[in-house]
Length: 114
Image 1 (cartoon, rainbow, N blue to C red):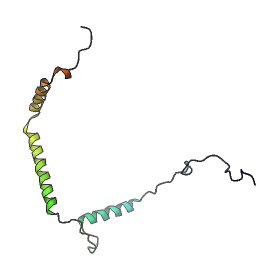
Image 2: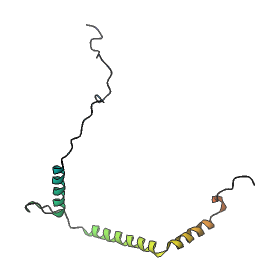
Image 3: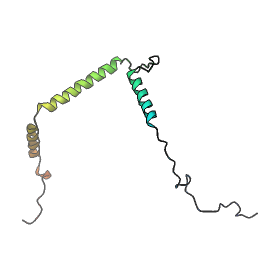
Image 4: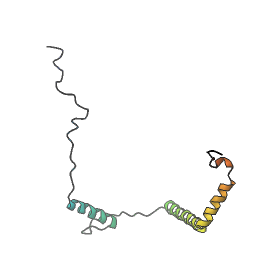
């Protein structure tokens, strides 16, 4: 028995198997897609085809959730009212005034002869 009896013969292989063989994905037929969409739609609406297997998906919100959503709405309305208060011309003039207040350090340096 030689020391080389257990050596594998042939070309070297990459880890994970042969890279030339690729698995093909199974394509779902349109009828399966339609069945899934219909089932999802019925779950959202809450009614099944026979009406016996209805799911209760909407739940009653807690007081904290209601209060949180109300504060979110108020903050959103404040943001919208602030944005609508000034016209574009006013915003541009304020921005230009702000740029004029900055020191010359931020100005574009003049490079060239003269």
